[in-house]
Image (cartoon, rainbow, N blue to C red; front, side, top):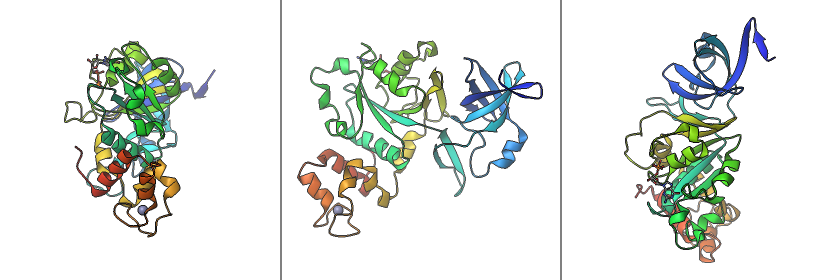
Length: 309
Ligand code: GDP
Ligand code: ZN
């Protein structure tokens, strides 16, 4: 069965890694991957973006010896991209077709960092990327998990997990199924441990997932997808932290805080920055507890362009 091009069978798959002009494609119908090059015509068709990127859905022909040729790249549903260096109009795709982001922190060791989380959240909101927040190492916490990121729990799904005891891991697995999930978080929170626990076949070395906070050794590696199951992938995307630090346009910032949205447009001044103006609906909502003070502080800090602390 399947679709044939002359005597060659057409296979569908997902690009999981890029090596210069070669792309590793994970096939939908099997656990196999093919090392592929795009056929010539694709290069002329795509202007202003990468011809093929990690996350692209592709149709390939198996040419033997584990190699293939990319015949077709499906239109991207979404992209996480940045402007390519030295250009104004060419995007460099970090991941094609991301479905959601998982921002992973630890309940402790290292201590959770709400302001860093907010930077990631603003990035996701600005790209309309749905968000999951994971709190790992819940086994190390004596008290109630609700004490970790209390303000965020009212706004985003927060999943308490422990890779060590397996708590919450199966629930998280369900939330990842059939999706490409971009994972980011500080070093040491358990990203590699989590991906290993979701797919033990991967056998990643601990701390092998790129750290999103640090000047660590992995910051220059390209994005790659780890396959967890059929059409289920975790994206390890080293460029995320830089993108989060870059921030968003100031006028878009209030919209990137979902809990601000009901109050936007109700300030005395149309051009209210929500920092110091009288009659500010956002600041009133902070006063009445409808908007969390920590989240508001993150907003003010991002608005001022504070460096990451
Ligand atoms: P990464 O830098 O985010 O990839 O973090 P790693 O996966 O390398 O984990 C960092 C450390 O945290 C390792 O020593 C892990 O064994 C440990 N760790 C990971 N998950 C858990 C957990 O759920 N509970 C506890 N107590 N330790 C964990
Ligand atoms: Zn205001």
